[in-house]
Image (tube, rainbow, N blue to C red; front, side, top):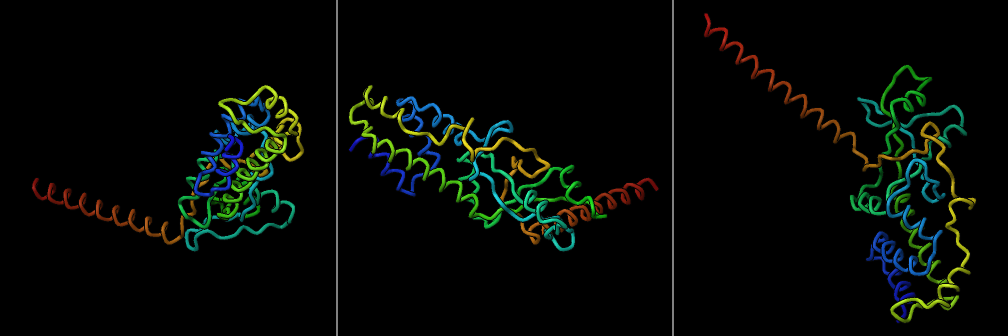
Length: 248
């Protein structure tokens, strides 16, 4: 079995993580001098920085919710649908391994908090100011992994069609030349479905992504904190009283 055939077989094995496939394909692409493809691989392995362009499949729709201390997370209602569409979509700039780690949590929903300034802007027509987050469905994260896996498969199939196999220890010079004929869809500087950073106010920044914490969970910890405060207060009061009576 050739290097390319073996890699195609591994891509179809869903027991293998996408991050491990990316590390393996990085070696193959390096040997074939696939510059654009390598740039994309590096972004997926290391994450997309603030200044990075990012692909459509990393733009995730969700539901904007505000924190109500009595009801938990409640949906934010927007007056204009175009504003809602803009705010209700943010990019995932995490590395593939980070996304895999999040998915391993088995949560159905994931939270992406907005900064205080963005939250105030979203709630500018509301007399109440509170935390605001975008809640992303689990399927959006799984979708990113599936797209990346499929991109790797497309690349490997194109190599095979160009008769780039990698039968020996290294690819031949002819195979390297044939590989350059493969049209790359990963040229971040020019292709249409890559976009630059459009700023946090428009809802694109997604540095923090964590499993959703339920209202009951938050309420439980609020209760624990309150109980600890009461206990500490009683202890301090008892110490003060004993000290006071000791003086008398």
